[in-house]
Image (tube, rainbow, N blue to C red; front, side, top):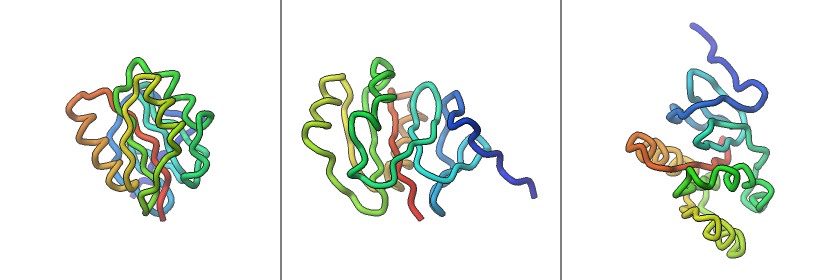
Length: 129
């Protein structure tokens, strides 16, 4: 059986569905990646966030960079739903980006549905075991 390719240099260009999640990572585009990911209109990149409290403006700067192509950001906060800081929510709103926070599995599934509908969606997904 072929081993899936891995995310190289922390980025793969293009739009892809999330094929699987769990075991500390994700599968997409016939690749696997251990750790969290940002799924943006430009591609999927490794995201050095392991817990909700690490999500700040710096962590979401790539989302801000692509704000013109994103109407909704889905944030997968792991196994439990955890709120984002009000100032971070306001900052996203100022950049024209809506926000929905949910468990990582729900966020990955919702992303797939909205992406299949060709919606302007992005996802910030914290890896789960």
